[in-house]
Amino acid sequence: MTTYKHSIIIAIDGPAGSGKSTTARLVAERLGFIYVDTGAMYRAVTLAWLREGKPDIEVFLRNLPDISLSRDPQTHRQMTLLEGVDVTDQIRTSEVTEQVSYISSLKTVREKMVSLQRNIGTDHNVVMDGRDIGTAVFPKADLKVFMIADIQKRASRRLEEMKSKSKHHVPSLDELIQQMKERDTYDSSREIDPLKMADDAMLLDTSELTIEDQATIIIEKAKPIIIKHSHGA
Ligand code: DC
Image (cartoon, rainbow, N blue to C red; front, side, top):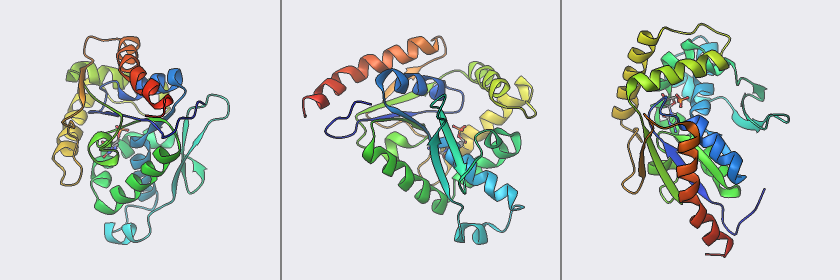
């Protein structure tokens, strides 16, 4: 991986199914950056809470589980570890999806995850996707993109993603639209670091764009920034 004087941060935020993760992964791959899916971290905390039998939240927060990220040696894809054990597949179940907005709204959880995310961005050039990367995690990110798309498109994309990623029950399109609307409302209206476009973010409506289009747009925006960094700016 190319190293620069300071690490470069590309922040990609937006609601579920807006095309963030696939696009962010592709952009990272092409630029030789590390891709970080921050939603997976909140999902792993949620999985831990479910596995513990949904204990009282105050008790759970006193001793949050250990979450870390690794790379699959073959595919180089992100692996999400809970107490050192790979849970990349288990965090995609509908049980986790139903509870993740709640767990990720908790201050203690956010503080811990944001600190882990900042640590990753200190040492590496990253493309990080989430809800609050450009507003809270890296307010000084080199490039901020806020992706949106119409709900029908988002739900059908998420459905395809779920079918390919998950061995678990996959909901119907209508169920998914409903769930996504609820999750977006919850994520946008929570008190701490809600889903919100940063003032200096580029808005990208992906409704009519292919993944390839989206990646190209972001890479074109990133190129001058990378050149500037390589000259020590
Ligand atoms: O991207 P995703 O659907 O896997 O994210 C799961 C949930 O995690 C999402 O509903 C909101 C939360 N999340 C968050 O609060 N902040 C982030 N940076 C990423 C995800």
